[in-house]
Every structure is written in C-alpha cells, then in structure tokens.
Length: 521
Ligand code: AHR
Image (cartoon, rainbow, N blue to C red):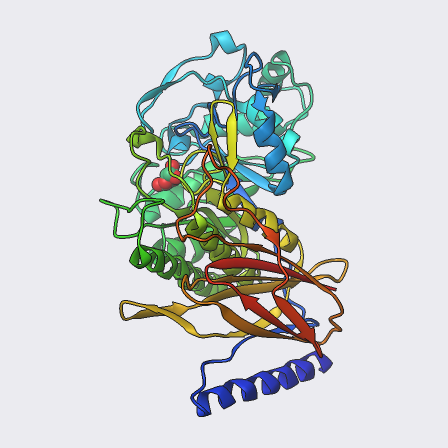
C-alpha cells in the first residue's frame, strides 16, 4: 500500500511539472521518475548475452587463433579478446550459428585436429571450414569466460539422433557410447550446458518450414533432448522474425507443445532502407542516424506483440522470450568479402545498444535472454580484430557501462520527454531504464538520441534517499565517430559530472548524442 502511495505522490509531483510546462508553452520539461522502492522483476543477466557464429572472422582470427599462434592465447583462444570479454561479464554465449547451425554436424568438430573433416561454409562466403574450433574448444571458451553455454542445434539438415547424441556427449556423466568418445577426446567430466536452441530461423535458412511443420518437428526433437543428472536444459524453440506473430501463436496455443520448450526465440535486426542497400556503418547522414533509432524502437512494439500472445497462454510467465539475434546490419566494409558481413561500429551503434538494452530491461518480466549479433568481427560487434590488433567498439563500452543492471531489480520509471524530430517523423529523444542492485545501489541508464541538442532531464528519486552520485558518459564529436586500428580510443567512456542532486531530484544535463550511466547511493 505504502509503495503505491509513494508512487502516486511521485506521479502527482511530476505530472504537475509536466502540465505546467505544457500550459505555459515552455519547452517540455524532461523527466524520469524513478520509484526506488518499487518491486519489479529481476533483470536476467542473460539479456546481456552474445553470439558467436562460424561466419567471416568471428571464430577464426577473431576468437580462435590456435595454440601455435604467435598471438598470445590460452588453449588457442586469443588472450586480448578473452580479457576484454571478461570485463563486460558476458553471461552466455550462443554458438555455432545462426544459419551456420543448421548446416553444422557436431561430430565433424571433435577428435584430433588433423583428422577433422573440412566442409564448405555454404552460408558464409563459401570458405573452407576445417572444424578446428569445435565442441571442446567452444566449451573451453565458455569456461575461460565464466559464462553459460548456449548451443544452437541443427534441425534443418540434422537428425533427432544427432542432436540427442550431442546433448549426451556434452552433459551425461554415465557410461555410454557418447561419453566414451568424449573421454577418449580428453574430457572426463560432463560440461554444464544451460541453453539449447532447437534450430535457427527454421522458417528461412533453417529449412523453410511452415509454423505448423516446425512445431511438430520441434516437439519430436525436444522429446529426445534429455536432462542428464546434474544438468537442466533450457530449451529454446525457434520463433519468428520481428512481428511474425502467427508463428508465436502456433507455438504457444497448445499446452502439449508449450511443455516442450522453456524459451521462444525471436530475431530482429535494424536494416536502414531495406535489405538491398543497407547503408554504410560509418558514412551516413542525419536521416540515416534518425532512421536507425526509429527502427531500433520498433523492438519495443515487437516484444509487446509477442508478450500479449504469451501472456494469453502463459499468464504465469513460465516461458521466456529469447531475442537471440539483434543489432544494426549495414553494408559490409568496402573491399571485404560480402559473405563475411564485416562492418565497423560507430557512436550510432552505441546508442542503438543503449536503446535495445533499456527496452530489454523494461521487459524483464518476459525477456529472459538476448544475444547481440555477433560478438567479434561481424555485424554489431563489441570487438574488432586485425591480425594481432584489437579494438573495442563503442558498442563494447555500452555493454561495459550497462553491466551494472545484470541481475539487478528493475525499478518502475515514468519517462516524459521531448521528441527528436527529423523529416516530419518523431521519436522520443531519451531512452532510459533503472534498476537497484543487491547492495541497494540504483543505476539509471540514459541515452540522448538528438545529435544537435543537449537535453536537461530531471530524475526525482521517489522512495529512497539519494545521497551520492557518480557517472560515466560515452559520446564523441561526430555522429559517425568510430574506433579504428589506427585510432582505437576515439570513442570511450569518461567520468561524467553533468548532474546536480537536490532534495532527491537528480538533474542531468545530457550532451547531444550521448549515453550516460549514473550510480546513486
Ligand atoms: O547474423 C547473420 C544471420 O542472420 C544469422 O546467421 C541468421 O540467423 C540471421 O538470418
């Protein structure tokens, strides 16, 4: 009761400020009310997940250089990338695809390296895949990162037996044909595997199935994915792209089908101007900047649409929404292999990351996992590598700044803000979310999307005493600023002092085109 009373008083206070501004025709007073004693859901750390695909130089060169490489490595995994990824607390890593997953036959990637089969990566550039990075190497990577494994099984061109044996190979501690092979390959104990996807984009590259056909196939595959003692799989059914709600309806409507999975995947990419010409990652104008964010915001409505269906059949929210591919998708960098999808990453991508992560936080009651595509050297990557060099992208820095939300409790917020308008269209100029961690520290993450205007925002903190504040900011002079191998630190976070705290109201002056994370104690 007290909680609601405080919320009500907070709203009255803020509502009156807002109305005053509107009546007197003064500029909109931007406000984010933070209800510090509200009891929202926990923000799953897995919302901050990543995705490693056998695509271009994501695995080979980006993560895996082999134990004999001159590039410093641990068991073949490059150290610079490993150490940088530890900093952002990668909670889970999805592998081996993407479209690659439905062509991948796991037994090609185990055993002595010299005896592993080479295959053609038919989806991505037609290059030879020598399978030197396989199950053992991936599981070692997750161990070194201290993250959960998210394995994407092959439904499109694989068999039920193949997938079921992979689970046995990985997670069983008993005597069995698969565990015998695992031990011969040098691994005595089973590994823990948390997430398991039953196919990828099976409406497209994963087999061009209809929703009903996939639903039946998924039920069959899922039946043989066993939980061996000590391991419990969180099975992820392949869901649709974007607003393909019919697919979600088909998976959710039948109770027997719902029993077969714990999570339902959706994919959503931001593609400015359509798939034929997706725009450049670094050479763009304000129209493309605006369009990118306008399309980024669509993920909010897409999630709401899927949630509405899931809520109807699963009001107790036992099934999670798994946004296991998201991010900006631009043209490849000039001169690079078109099949490798290698793109640079600018301040625009950092703001995209902030918008998505704030939206995922806000939907923490249903969104349990999300994976940015892809972790190194592909679409909206957090790391780029070139031989022995590495750069941390602006997106990386946002993941580092936002890691404070992992496993924190979402706080109720009420955002009223001015619009950012361009070419007759408008979007909210501010993106925000807030959480409270187990030590009682409140974190507010904000982004100012407007590239031309500083924005002052009042944040009344209701229901808790705000005593001290610290903050970090990520911004740059140019909208298209990016970190290159020549200039790797052009865009990086610095200490932020642009706030005042008075009577529990935090007033933040957000520079144009910036991302800010504040900590309140
Ligand atoms: O991320 C690139 C591709 O996009 C993935 O392999 C596929 O799942 C999606 O279509």
